[in-house]
Length: 544
Image 1 (tube, rainbow, N blue to C red):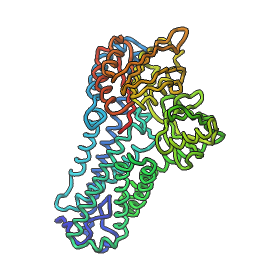
Image 2: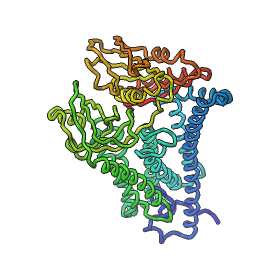
Image 3: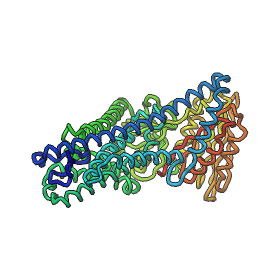
C-alpha cells in the first residue's frame, strides 16, 4: 500500500506538542490509510524518544559510576596501602581526565561542562532529525513537539530542590541550575520549531481558520506564550528584580503546564501522561519543601541583630537535621516578608546562624527591621539544608579562596572545619580572601572560633591571607596578614599545594566572581598530577 501524503485536509496529524494524530474535530475525516500513517509516525516518534531517554539515563549513570568509583578508591587507598599501589594506574588516568575537564572554557564553567552540553545538544539534534519522513513539514513538527515535551521533563528534573542527584552524584540543585537553563532554552527552541512548522503547514493547507477554532490549538497558543514568558523572565527579569522574576517564572510555568495538558488531552497518544509525570515531580518537590517549612515553624523563632556595614546576624532557635556550616537554607521570616523565602549560607550550627549582607529587596528590609528592633526574636522557619561539598575532614590540607561576597561560603566552610578540628589537629588550612576594601572588624563573619582582624585601606584591591596551623594545645590558632594590591591568585594556590606529599590529599574550595573562578580552575587543574598529591576542586560560583 502506498503511503498517504500528509498534505491532506486531515489536519497533518497534529495534536500539539506530542504530535502523532489528528485533532479531534478532524478525526472523522481520516481515511484508514491516513490513520495507519499516523500510527506508524507515532511509533517512530515514541521509539526515538525512548532512545533519547536511554541516552540521558546513560549520561546520569556515567556520573553516578564515576562519583562512587572515586569515592570507593579514595576510601580503599587511605585504609589499605597495598591496594593504593595496585590502583595507581587507574588513579593516574582519572587525574589526567580531571586535569583536562576541570579547566575553564569560554562560555562554560569548565571543559567538562562544555563536553556535557555538547553531548546533550548532539543527542537532541540526532533524535530530532533521525528516522523522520522528510516529505512533509508536519512530520518534522511532530518530532520536534515530542522532543520539546521530553526536554520539559528534563528541565523540571534539573530544577528540583530535593533532587536525587545530590546523593547519587554529589551535584545539588544549585550546581545543576546552569544545566536546567540550557535544557530550558533547548526545550523552548524545539517548541518554537514545532509551532512554526505546523503553522506553516496548516497555512499552506488552507486550514488555519479551522485550527484557530479548535480548543486544543487555542490551548497550544496559551502554552506557547506562557513558556515564552518563562524564558524571558529567566533571561531578562531575573537580573533586574529577582522577586518579580520568581513570581512570573513560577506562575507562567503553572499556566503553561495546564495549557499543555488541554493541548494534549488524548491518553492514547501518551503526551498527557508525560505532562502529568512532569507536573507530579514538581508538585511532590513543593510538598516536601512546604512540609519542612511547616515542621520547622513549630516552636521556632529567629533573633535579629544588626551588624556594621549593613549586615544582619540571624540566629534560629531550632536547626534542621543535617545542617552544616557551608550549606544553605531558604529562610522564612513573615515579620519582614510574609510570602518570600530566600537562600542564605549557614555560618554556625551549634546555634544555627546566618550572616546576611543587606543589598536590595528582602535583605534590605531585614536589616532595617533589625536596626529598628535590635535583638528582637520573630517567628521564623526554614527549608533545607541544601548544598553538597566534599567533607574537609577527608583532606590533609584545605585551601580556601574567596572573592568579595564569596567569603559568605568560605567562612561557613571554615566554621565547619574549626568546629571539628580538635579531632584532627594535624590539618593545615590556607585561607586567601580578595576584597576591594577591608572592614575594620570582621570577627562576626569568621564564626567557629576564627577571628579575622582587619584594617581599613584606601587601596582599591587588597588581599587577605589567613593561614591556620593548629597548635596541639590550641586548635584554633592562626596567623593573619594583610597585603595591599591585587593578589596573584595563581601563585598563591601553587604555593599552597606544591610541596604537599603525594600520599596526602588537598582540597581547594573557592567562591567568587567569574574572573577569580577561571584562575582557580585553570591553576588547580594543572596541579592535578598523577604523581602528585590528590587534589580536589570545589567551586561555589555566583554571577552565572
